[in-house]
Length: 176
Image 1: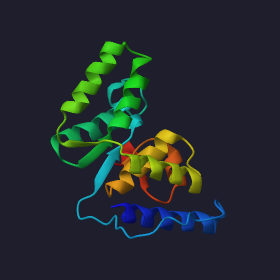
Image 2: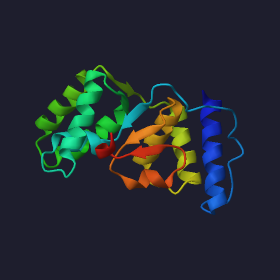
Image 3: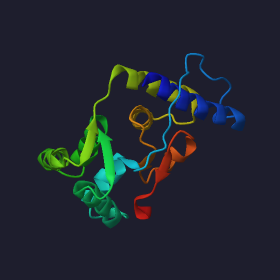
Image 4: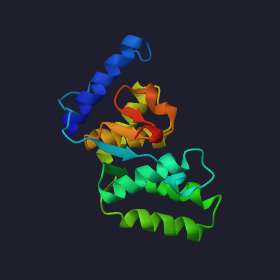
């Protein structure tokens, strides 16, 4: 699996290098991987998870629709425990901690949504992604590393930062 992620990162780094965004491609990246799949899996970003429960969010209905489709298995979806932790943190501010915890418990109960744990290798890929792409927020880089590790080509997010990275494709919730 490490070789597969390395190839995807290398290819992305080479694209970034051609654009002039980076100067070098890390030497330790090699191997092969294909993100082509018959059935696309979508990674759910914290913006989608938060806005699905925040009725005041601009794309609340669209995000809620994505979560409902994922929960029913109408689309293949995954997220990470790190993304759920970020969602818990974000929701704890405008609501009570008990409400935020209840929401996270509900997401954990949605068995059709895969939840991935971060491994040491994921964190190492995160650092490489931050070094070779314009993506500088650790949480976003962790999401990309998790996606590459599990061959997930698309992220459902309102966050345009993901468009700076040629390693994955961002899908806005209104477009799904």
